[in-house]
Structure formats: C-alpha cells, structure tokens
Image 1 (cartoon, each protein chain N blue to C red):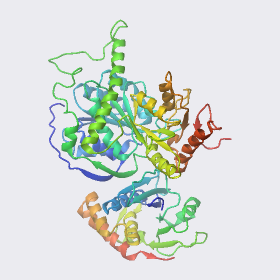
Image 2 (image 1 turned 180 degrees about the vertical axis):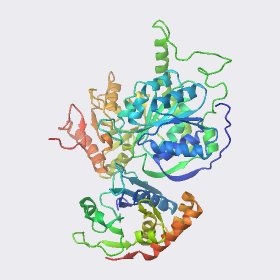
Image 3 (image 1 turned 90 degrees about the vertical axis):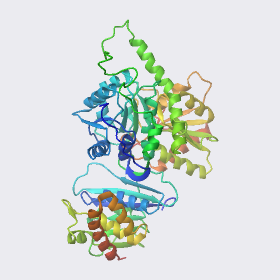
Image 4 (image 1 turned 120 degrees about the vertical axis):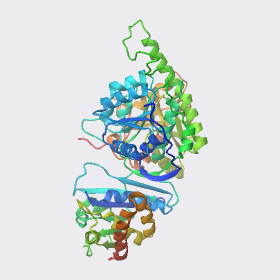
Amino acid sequence: MTESKQKDFIQPRQTKVVKGNVATAYAAKSARVQVISAYPITPQTTVVEKLSEFADSGMMPGTQYIKVESEHSVMASIVGASIAGTRTFTATAGQGLFYMYEMIHWASSSRLPIVTAIVSRGVAPPWNIWADFTDVIACRDTGWLSSFVATHQEIYDEILMSYKVCEDFDVLLPKFVAYGGFILSHTSKPVIIEDQDLVDEYLPPLPDEKGWPHIFIDPERPMMHGNLIMPSGFYSEFRLKIHDAMMRAAEKIKEAAKEFEKMFGRSYGNGLVQKYHLDDADVGIMIYGDLALQMEQAVDELRDEGYKVGMVKLRHFRPFPIEDVQEIAKSVRVLGVVDRATAFGSPTGGPVSSEVKAALYNTDIKTPILPIISGLGGREVSLEEQKDQLKALVKMYETGELPEDLIHGTLWHGKLEVK
Amino acid sequence: MANGIIEISFAGRGGQTAVSASELLAKFAFENGFIDVFAIPIIGAERRGAPISAFTKISKEKPIKTYDSVLHPDYQFIFDTSLLEIPRIRESIKEGTILIINSKKPIDTTGLPENLKIYIVDATGICIEHRFMISSGGILNIPMLAAFAKITGYYDLKVMDEVLKREFGEKRAALNMKVAQDAYNSVKEVS
C-alpha cells in the first residue's frame, strides 16, 4: 500500500450544492485517504456510494477501496491498513457501529489515527434510521475521540481537522465525527470544497514507508501486535496513556481549529465548544449536532423579543471540554442542556446533561441545570419547539423554579401523549 | 415567506422524481445567485406510487438555519393531481400559495382557500412526447422546474442548462433542455 503512487489530482476550490454524505466523501478525498473500507448501512449508504464512485473513476489516485462483508470486517481491515502505516477512513451508523464495536477497541488500544464518520441514527428495536446520537455516545468509553457536527460545511471541515488532531504524535487516537442521519446526510446545502494544495498544506504529510512511530508491519523491524498481557504487565499503564493522550488532545483540537480558521476562514469557536450570543446572556442552552444550527435562529428570535438568551454548541464529547463547561455554567444564571440521545438510568437520562452536572461537582458553581431530551429517533424539532425550550429556561430564571412537568428531573420535550 | 426565505414544497408519488426536483431547484437557485439553499427530502419507506414529500428553502440574503419541514409553502408543486385529495397536502395550502400542477386541464378547486394562483403544465404529456422516461414514467422534475422558472424568474433556462451540463454532461443536458423549453412555453395560469 505504501508503494501506491499518490499522484496529484488537483482540485481547485469550489462550492457545490451537495448532500451531507457527499460532503463526507469529498472530505475523505481532500484528505487523500489511502485506504477506505466500508459496508453500506442507512443512512450512511450514500457516503459509500460516492467514495466507490470516486475511487472507481480515478478521482482518488492512490486510494485502495476494500470491499468487505460486514462492519466487523470493515474495522478489522481498517485496523490492519492503519497498522501498515496509511491514512484510513470509513463511515457507519447505528447497528453497523455496534457490529463494529469489538474492533473499535482494537483501533484505539493500538493507538491508530483512524477517522470514522458516524451518520447517527436511532438504535433498534424498533427499527429507526433517523437522527439520534445514542449510537455514537454508546461508544463513549472506547478511547475514541468524538465530535458532533451541525452543518454540511462543518462535516467537511471537521473531518479535515480530525486527521490533523488524530495523527499528531502526542495524540495517536481514532476519532468519530458524528452527524444526524437524514437531517444532514440526505439534505443538500452549499459546501465549499477547498483547494487541494491548501488542504495538503493544512494536514500533516501522509505517513511514509516507516509508518507510525509506535506500530508498524516491517520485516526489518519485527514486532508483535495485540498479544496477551499478564495482570502484572503494562495493561493498566497503557490505559493511563490512552486517557492522558485523550486529555491532551483538547489542546490539539484547539490548535487545529485555530489553524483551520487562519487558513480557510471558517471559525468553530475554540474547537471544543462554539458560543453564540452567550457573553451577556442570563440564560444559556447547550446543544449539539444538527439541532444546534436551528437553535441559533431560535436564539435570534428570542433576542428580538428582548430576552437575553445565548447558546453553546458542544462540538466535542470526547475529550469532554470540562473547563469550558465550567466557565460557561458560571457565566449564565440558568443553563439548559439538550440531548438528542438517551443514557438510561444515568442522573438525568441524557448523556451530555449528566456529564455537564458531573463537570460542576466540587466547584463553587451553583447554576441550575435543566436537562432536556428532544428529537429522539429523528422526531422533527421545529423552530417553535426550540423557542419553547428557551422560554422554559427564561421562566426558570425569572421565577427561580423548575418547570412542573419534569420526569425524573428532566424535561422530555415534544413527546406524544401516551395513554 | 418566513424571514425572507422562500419555501417550496413538493408533492409527488414515488418514481415521479419529486425528491430530485427539490435538489435540482436548490442547485438552479444557487447557480443563479441565491446565497443559501437547502433541499430537504422526507425519507422513510419509499416505494413506487406512494406519496412523497420534499422541501426546498432558498434565500437571497440570509443564511438558512431552519431544518424543520415547510408547513405552509409559498410554492406547492403537485406532480400528480390525485395528491390533492390527501388532507395533509390540502391543509398545507394557504391563502397566497402558488400551485404548480402537472395537469392537462384545470383542477377542481372546491374546498381550497381563495386567492390561489394556480399554474398547470402537462409535464407527463411533454415527457411522453420526447420519450423522456424512466421505468416509473416521465422524468417530471425537468418540465416542472422549467415551468417554475417561467413563473418565478428565480432562475432561467440558461441556468438550468449550465447546471444540467455539469451534472449530466452535454448530450443528456440537450434532451433535458428540449423538454424544459416545451414546459417553459406551455405553462399557463388557470385561476
């Protein structure tokens, strides 16, 4: 694979009206990934279709496209390709991600900088193929970095930034880039596909024949991979190193976002979080994924009505931006946290709101947190509903009281009446 | 029109190319200088003949931030007149909605709001005449979108030609444009 020639296929900067999944494929192309392995699953399928079209038509010279029979084999082949010292890419969703789950650990514990797009969908049963981040969040403790994406352009941009972070020798961990099924994957918007020369300049060079510094397949330098380690061996220490790399990745994410903004002119806050009208806000709302863009409009409209509301888009779930969350919670008087995902039996029922609460423990921050769960399984969340969520927070701020209709302390918003 | 954003709704049946119409309209408008466009297909268990919805939002000035579906469109495409019998579609038609209908003859407007502007174009007939067909029938999106160009001026045939050439190549674009030209010339107001 390292012998395959990376011929120049120069693509000038262009804006195309494309589906989110097509933006994903363009990002992989712009990143000059060398090995793709993928198995189609709704709503990720069009990523695979587009990538195979690119690979087949010669638009991705130097890229090997491996056809496999399942998601488990997808990650197995990607792990092998990455150990061999190549830049790799795949995409999956929901049940496909779960079928991949065992191999996901092989990727992170081998410290391989694999980038994987997750076109998030509800978890079956009952079958559901629409936006819900429970799938990617269920991989919380796998040692993969993970981020949520809110716009079509951000899909393309975030995949590029991810390679920069993951391939940093201080990080060397894989990453999920998640976006909502259908809401972003199958809708079309204008997306800027950047000039190839600039992307090449932004990203680290592709690995050379020697591959990654810590793991390789090379007869001249024989090494064993994934062998048994006794309890007295370095198992625990390897774990600590993964955690340490993950925590240090936060700074690398910030650097990558800063450099991205300088080079391409698009800002994503500090990379970990992106604030919107939060500086003078009494009431804040934290939200992630596709719901964040429309929430900006809800904030705009409530601002027009005279309410001092603001929002923060959570961009990274792992590493969790603990310091940013603390600073944001401190700066507002009431904070709502919207989850389009579930964490059954957790303190709030929502994965991110539970983490936000945990991040504030043992601090002097007493800002009340309102956990909100909204839009599960792709249920449409209208602009009006998002304004209602903000209004519930405003009321909480004005009266000092929690809303009445909470269930186990959480506002399950927009649910149907069940008799 | 919400916040200066033009909202367009497509009602078709599976196979009538309504979903690709929503995407093509976005591409045509963007090509013609709209600063933001957003095509939203409603995807579920699609099958030939089943009612299909899709939406397009286009904006000349402001970025489009809403992902929610269009409840009361400014423009409503009807690819198949039988869809007008579906309550959800009837109810979405508000006063001032402009209807673009694939039909040879004027439709029965009983029960619909007053002050509607209704345009008809015989898209199916034009497709059959030009043998502009796929296995499910005529490729209706091209004549319907050409009619839309005539009605709104949001883009013109030249823009359609440019985009289609880029997407499908010169030869296929040429056939598309013959169909488009016929629809452009023959769409008429009936209200």
